[in-house]
Length: 73
Image (cartoon, rainbow, N blue to C red):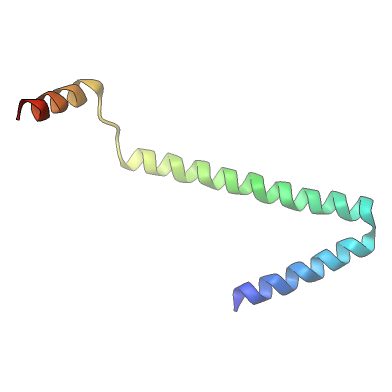
C-alpha cells in the first residue's frame, strides 16, 4: 500500500518538476536526491556508532592469547 502511494507521489512530483522547466526542476530534483543521500549516510553513520558501542572490540593481548590457546589444542 505504501509502495504504491510512494510511486504515485513520485510520479506526480516528477511531472511537476518537468513542467517547471529543466533548470528549476533540475535544481530541485538534484536537491532532493542529494538530500536523501546525505540523510542516508548520516543514518548509516549513527547505526555504525550504536552498533560499535554495543559490541566492544577485543584488545590485541586477549586476541593473541586466545589464538595461542587455540593453536595449543
